Length: 363
Image (cartoon, rainbow, N blue to C red):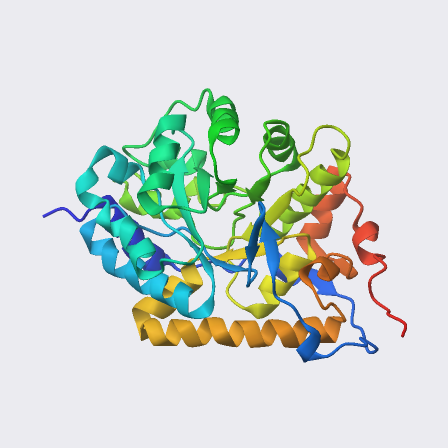
């Protein structure tokens, strides 16, 4: 009996792991020996698309669409409920086409009736499908994921990507909840981000390389792999830098107010999360690291991992002298290595990051 594609993705994601090459080793926070702060003053609250979240950590889209994935989503939802995290489901198109598998998504809302739940569809979705996805979960926001390279490598994947931006614009215009446009692990650059801003999108998840590699996953499913495409994309660190550069350049040119960035792609621990936030993200999405903990050690271990990350975030933010997520955006960062080389080639000033003025406070 053939394993459903959704479970194939889960198995390959666990087997292949994460490369860990998301670029954060090139990001060096400038140390602050006079932070004038205290752990009791740290706030982890953040705002995404007008939603007030108690934590900047999001359990990002993983799975759904098969009865075998219902258990995974149930456990993730319980962990989200117990730790106050927002959670996104995997693509709901399977349930829109086949209502019999809708329970694998609805279980998230059933287990976490009062939490923040994000729906998810691909860029092929029409407005009516987006509305059905939101209704299915009573979702607080909807992710539209971009996965062109994954589809091209996928044996049964799409080959026509015309009209993506217009469909996103229409969904943004008609949807009653915030829209999040996210990459699935190939990253974003300022050109695409600028177009999304012009289409009215207010929340962008850059989804950079360095985490779950969907090119490698689809190649593992092919009889004739195209492994030379496994390195496609740009890192999460580069994607966040490109995004902040795009937003800075578009101020006064139609960029929506309260624009928010989510950093995701290979974030496995607290320091990487903190660096992503310091690069301009309002939140960070984690998927592979949480899935591995859940499947290896169980739900309680996942809850403990999240609680430990919250405690560690408070410690690091105290050391940096940043009491809020917004204050992290002003902390100076030195950018080195391949990330600095990328910035130089793209005309992005690394000196701007290195000489930000949020380091020293006076009393």
